[in-house]
Structures are given as structure tokens and as C-alpha cells.
Image 1 (tube, one colour):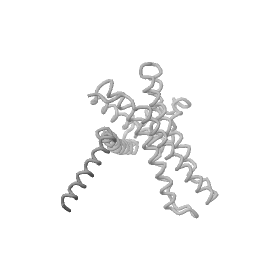
Image 2 (cartoon, rainbow, N blue to C red; image 1 turned 135 degrees about the horizontal axis):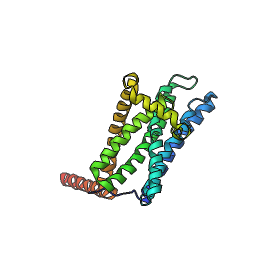
Image 3 (cartoon, rainbow, N blue to C red; image 1 turned 60 degrees about the horizontal axis):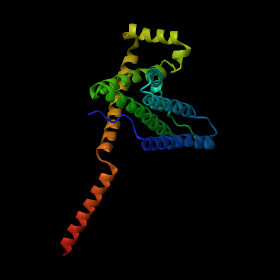
Image 4 (cartoon, one colour; image 1 turned 180 degrees about the vertical axis):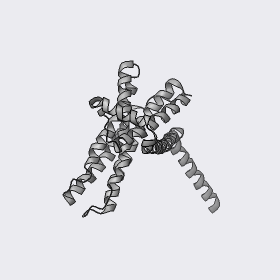
Length: 247
């Protein structure tokens, strides 16, 4: 059976508010750190988090304009272009180091809050596009599409972290970006890091997304009302058994 195409408005609002709250907590931690240390450490995470929101917005627009080919294609391309920005926050762990007077444990929590939020934003956008493709072409094509997208995302993260390219460089420096990518394809032995990192990063993203997808499937399999009724039924059975034992 094909999955339901889109999430309901109440679900969308709940997800939006949850991710907004998570983003606010991360920004608040950065602000609190500045108040204590008077240094602009980790302020780059705020910008990276803002970029991480863009793929989710484009994914929602792609689902909305699925019946308008031109708008859908534009939104889908922009989604794919900016998607690496969401899991890119994982690589910001390289910035972790002791920075007195703020303790290292605080910085670990700060960076991890951005990492987790970025992954959730990215995976939710992939989930929306995954369901859209599965609804149109079947679940096998949907998963094939997702594997390919996450592999490309791993390569996109490499371009950002090691080659220092940005998503918008496709518009501002298309020739230089294309030449850099072509050089990697022509000389794989001289660019082993690109292939190894992209493969490992893509694998990590797929396994993590698979866990994310499994949790959403588990949530759909047991509706909250049914779960609540089951819990009340179990509690009633337990009380009856206890009363029989006392009697």
C-alpha cells in the first residue's frame, strides 16, 4: 500500500513548534555563553542552523506544489541543493575544545543541541520527499530515491567541510565548482578522502534516517488513542487480579 501523502496540519504545527523550540534552546545557549565569556564562540552555529531550516521549507513547498510541475521542480531542486546544510552541523563537532571560562561539558551540550536539531530538520525534509516519491512510484523507488539522495548529501557535506563550497556557489561560481567536482571524478586516487568520507557519511546518514523512519512507522502503527485504551485495559486487568488475590 502507498503511504499517506502528506502530514496533517495539526501534525505539521506540532513538528514546527517542536523544532522551533529546539532551535531556540540552541540559540539561547549560545547567548548565555556569550554573556559569561564575552566571546563570539560558536556563533557560526546559529547561521548553520538557519541554513538547516531551508531544506524543510523547500520540502513542504514541493509537497504543496506537487500538482504544478514547474514550481515542484524548482522547489525539489532547491531542496536537494540545500539539504547538505542540515546534517552538515554534525561536522561542527570539530570545533569542540576547552574554551575557559565556560566548561567543556557546557560546550558539548551546546554543539550537540545544534547537531540534533539539524539532523531532525534534514531527516524530516527527506521523509516528506521520500513519502512523495513512494506515493507516486511505489515504496521500492521511494527507498532507492532516498539512498541516492543521502549518498549525494554525504558528498555535499564533503564539499562544504573540506572544499569550503557553499550551496549558493552553484549560482555565484558554477564554473569553478563544476571544475572542482570534475577533477575529483577524473582523479579518484588523488581524492581518496572525498570518496571515503562521502561513503562513510552517506552510510551514517542512511542508517540514522532508517532509525528515524522506523520510529515514525511505529508511531503510525499504534495510534495514541488505541495505546491509551490498551494501557487502561491492562490497568483494569491488574486491579481485578489484585482484588481476586486479596479475596
